[in-house]
Image (cartoon, rainbow, N blue to C red; front, side, top):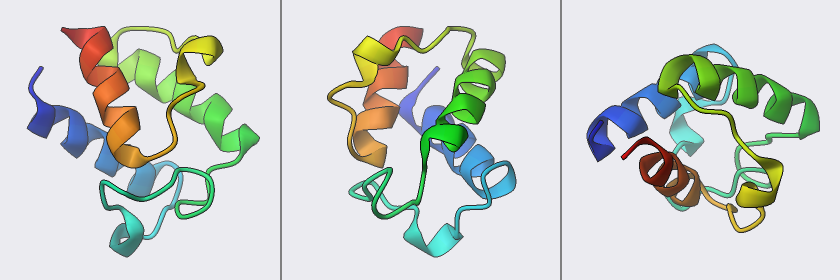
Length: 80
């Protein structure tokens, strides 16, 4: 899966499933502060990522993931 496909899928589930405003979805957006993703949303993200990308998120691997770009990079590493 290439970077464009990852970003497209992430963008889609942020808008459709988590109801994030499309205007704030930019690579440098911080997941918590800018996109408003909280711990309950994170539970949803775990399920969505498993369904869309075929792997389970390990919380310890997410410790350095702060921005949307970081998150897409993480998915890219796990799916290659």
